[in-house]
Length: 306
Length: 300
Image 1 (cartoon, helix red, strand yellow):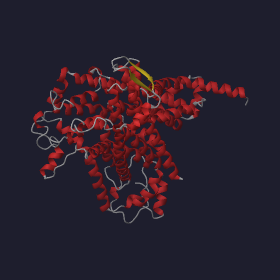
Image 2 (cartoon, chains in turn orange, red; image 1 turned 180 degrees about the vertical axis):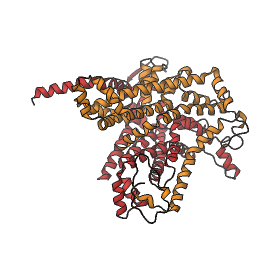
Image 3 (cartoon, chains in turn brown, purple; image 1 turned 90 degrees about the horizontal axis):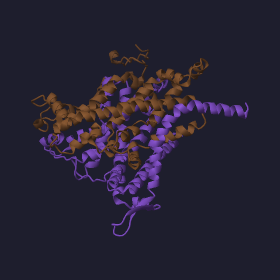
Image 4 (cartoon, helix red, strand yellow; image 1 turned 120 degrees about the vertical axis):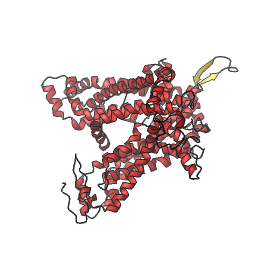
């Protein structure tokens, strides 16, 4: 039990939530049941708003082609056709969907890993080496955080078409491995989580700088996982850049492919297939978040607080 | 310490930092600085056609011609007006909801904190075009389960008329990004020291009053960050209107500034597209700096 100032008006002692990480005494513990109920109602209403479209997506992906827009849109149809829909999805147009998924994975996982490595090395150096020009570098990188990717997409297109690298894997991959936000986050994280003494003692022991960095990576892990996740999601959900750069459907990621299918307005690719494709395309993102949850929640807190 | 040792130390630090900083910096130059510089350069040129356009076209220096054209381009100005309108309505609503939800999750009056955190964060997993796709079906005039639901109780609604479109798009944005902002604000709330809230409670300040008067001012930096990122987000609006186009043929192909610039691109009007991008980028930077300055002043 937390050491709350025990107040006589408190009715339900069980309502005090166990807070695993940081139990805290809280002045809100004296809330009466009516307002507790009101709060719960408001929060549930918003949960409904956020979850309903996702629920529609899940339910619709299980319906037969004919049923998707008849009957109750938010409940299952007569037939549970999810497996068949997924089969149809992967067979459509000679199995191009699996190609799109593979492309997205390649761009997002590859780009995520490389960008995290580059950004955390740079952020580590900005935090730990007082080299001349360090603030100028950091300032320039920070300014880039404010320049959004879609605005940059057109200039990137102009340069890549000038150099003739348009419609290649690299036209999407190279812009994906630069994360100014990652440099910002890892500098802040490295500054607060890596003691100078650690770096100094590594040097006294005669370890090379890269060796010392490899040691510090363990301390920076939460920030690095956060950078990877953000970058993974950003690349996976990116649409404008790949749709500009890639005319070749076999190079396109799943977002570009799906929008192309949606624009066919139901024929020859049925709406059910588009909906199923949308659902399947979300699975890797969800899987990534769930499997790395214990890391990113920590890193996110640091990023927001500082 | 002599000047020589200072210089020697600086060179040593530079040598240490270089292998760590240069790989990122090199790519940063390629991906950010070169395209930006190239576009600025290109924006001062224009393709001049000789004769009746049958002769060869050549690119010539055009001074500020493209920029004059940008500010006389009714379509482009209208697109700026549209995103500003969406931003003025959507950003305050979204951040207001996010702040309230974050405070509610943070207050012990809420049960099922873990569930709500995840429920609110779910849309972040499918932002951009996938969210646009889902909503395009939910908005589709003949197919939408929402439209049919309203029709069955005798209310005719359309989400895709000219006057409804900004609100329909604002709703997609709110749906996709509120949870993300809620989590950011909630994270900042966790850092408010307990002692502060205990002291406030002892002084008789608790509940909503404490939340608004004590907690909110302490998380000002996080709120500011979400505000700036949301404003930037609105001006780069693209995915949602593009996916809406499949259900709203009336949606203009220059609906947002980026769509307008892309149309110039597809018309092979590269120099003008560059000028439009530069104007948009500059506008976003100026706005961000303005918001930072304004709120920094209000702190004092």
